[in-house]
Amino acid sequence: MQVFFLVAFFEKKNKILVRKGSIELDEYHEVTVIVPCYNEATTIKGTINSLLNLDYPKDKLKLIIVDDGSKDDTWQIIKEFEKPARLDDSSHSGGYPNIKIFHKENGGKYTALNLGLKHTETPFVGCLDADSFVDAQALKRIMTYFYDKNIMAVAPSVIIYNPKNILQGAQKAEYDMAIYTKKMLAFLGGIHVAPGPFSIFRKKVFDDLGPYKHAHNTEDQEIALRMQEHHYSIEHCPDAYVYTIAPNSVKKLYRQRARWNYGFIRNVMDYRRLLFKKKFGTIAFFTLPSGIISVLSVIFLFGMVTYGLIGFIIKKILQINAIGLSHTITSQSFNFDLFFFDTETIFFISIILYISVITSLLLGRSILEGKFRFSFDMLFFMIIYSVIAPFWLLKAIFNVLISKESSWVLEREVRMVKKPNATTI
Image (cartoon, rainbow, N blue to C red; front, top):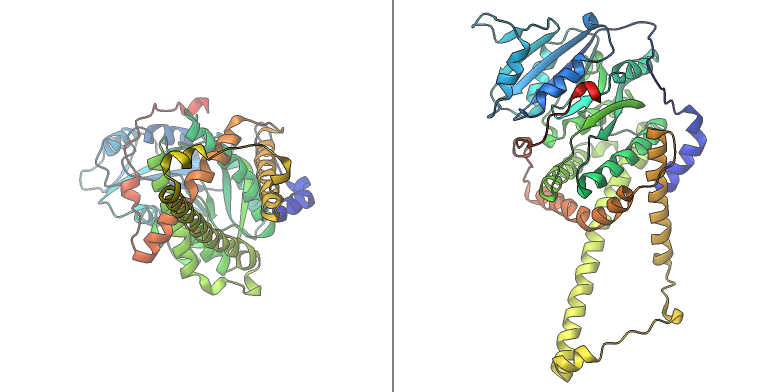
């Protein structure tokens, strides 16, 4: 997979568009951005302000904020963007005439998005997670891709905002690499996720294909697969930057990734009709199969490691029974000898794999910053993810086997973080 991406990069690198500074569009289309939120009192104000600060004509930008039954102060904060309205009116047009706000009983993110779609009248629509913040130029840069009438959706580059610990730093490296891999998939026509942070669609997508679905709490994967099935093109804009707050603990990251992987597995099962069908191209022969191989590989490797560990324990128990504990400990000795250096094929494949991952990390960083720059975040990413990623994937597989879905509500815990100043992003 890494080699395939690298070949695509060298073939297409001159087509990677990264612009600096402000740009102007030939025509400014009306765009609606829906912000679904649940228990986002610490971030929602910054999210809305970042949208209001977009360098885009205010009369062309519509915002729909949907509170999905929050239990904290989210709704009270959202109402700061309104002016007095009739008490019998479920929507409130606020002090900002381009903002509509809605409050509904909790039903899940997809229901909040669909409520926003119901009230969308513009030819373009997107969404922004309530813990994310957009760069002022993001919308303009995305809209340039719609000059091509065949492009039906454009995904941005998602960047970790202000990482404060090693775990968030590792996620930053992962997200930087994703800028590179997402762009390669776009070149190949194989994008399978239109991420919640600021993907923009032609409204025609939902008019033709229907609204968001529950999709195992991964509606952004499902809508992308639905688009791929109907041959609706998805692009990636590498210089449209969206900042998101990363989980700051292993528990939160584990829960998030277990949900993502559970959703991927279930969505692949739902769209298995796409697999290995020539008319569906890259998504059928590369994107989905590579994900399936990853799942099967983890199952196989976990089994092999478990088998090896059990064998090691049994061997030591027999050794202790034969010669005693003290002799077992004292009999262990280590003398370095190059003769015993591992020269099996798997060792060299592992070395090549890690080199290719580092290369992908550097390429992602170069697209983002315009230069190759190694950081310890990359090292933390490889170490941390090598240890804990198999566990959240195994958890996802287990949940699939017992049909236990992860919950968007459980994940949206109140984030005790300092509100970012959207004007400084």
